[in-house]
Length: 165
Image (cartoon, rainbow, N blue to C red; front, side):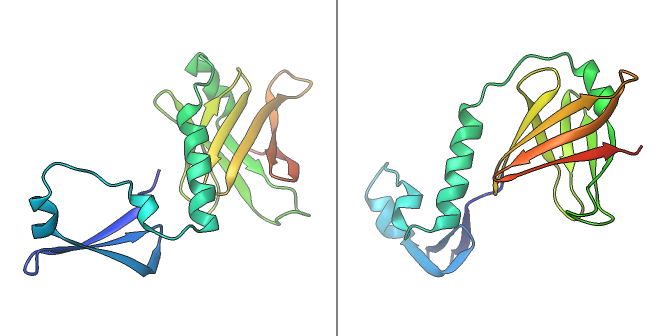
């Protein structure tokens, strides 16, 4: 999860410039001498800034992710899911999703994007809590009993991606 606040420390002036969720037009300046005189205290940093749709959506997704407990699954099954899945050409031509494993965690990797952890809800169904919302990934087996495709559900969109490698 990326950081929502950015800080610039000006130690000569004893000030901290605080920015929230990539919005550099609204800054909060914290005077360190004034704050230290107040003794031990804290702030709810998001409440110091104007509300934005993007920040609210991010916080909503973050809260869902934090509350999610998931299912206990044997990570050995992840090996069946690792591979390259071709996106439908009518959706995005010549693009694939990579499913990878790091230790006991499964990840989905979309081109030019950071990897996203896939959290199990069952042996073949996973959720990803991304900045754009919740994505559901279901691994489906073909006639041979091997994983042949993934079904991806996000917002109003549902599509299947065939396993090609």
